[in-house]
Length: 390
Image: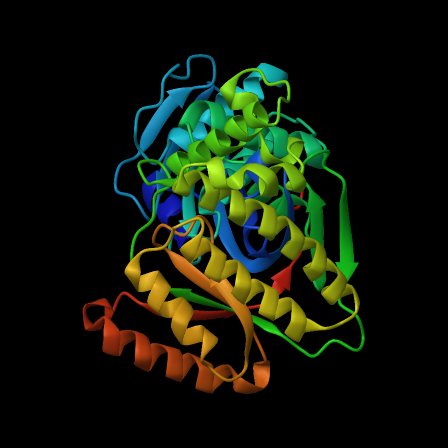
């Protein structure tokens, strides 16, 4: 791994250990978890690696192959406010873990992402891989749910992204050749095995060539628009409601939305429309997977992508074009944006028989539309994988 080579280059010795957290895809269930919806997801066999060694003086010193600046802080004096650089995710993780466990040992490490950043929950994967390393050097053992909660705390409360627990859950709970079916209301989940009668599949990742950042994008605004719609629906229906941030769509029945949706401002109504229809798509998708009908599951993923464009109103033009190309390409069961849909990657579930023709056709059509992305755009073929090893 390049991270190990870079570690030796910086420190003149080999790293003592390596942490790894997989990326994830969410074919159905996007823009739902922050309002306690249901999701389906898979971890993939690409992710974040960290080559590291303990530092007994409590200092954390991290470098990244993707970003030039090294970051440093002490486990006992992490800046209370984010510093607006790539290492904020790690500072937030240090603070969140330190609130629950006693930290004595720091670490030095080098982070390497095996796919381009954007749309594969790279932020959550960075946090979780770092947490596993920090736990290891401090002899801390966390349960799966504890590491999900700590990673969620770091991104929500320190970095300031209005995330739910989709990313963390997929990266921790997933199992190869199983679909994670998770209810973010209570954390209950099921790992649905790939049935014997299911057609074979692989996971294609199409990197648009555009860098991606949830912070500063319209991600938080979209979540606020959904909450605004929910808050108004509660008022229209005479339901009890409290603080704005406590409003979520899961507490408002679909019937209430249908009754009062015409009274909502159009943007708020669209965000609600996506959330309620996505909830139904997830339930149908889980049943399709259970039956081994990957074509039905893929069709629902395409529908999720359509709703993300037209109801959630996400997606850069480049991503939208990739989505359109996928819907017209033989051998693709289904797919959508991966992640929030503000630049970054698209994913697809594909028939492996068509792997070469899919890569060629999508590439040719995308670069014909966006020739400036030549040299930046990439295609990766992946498999499902186990979640992080704790």
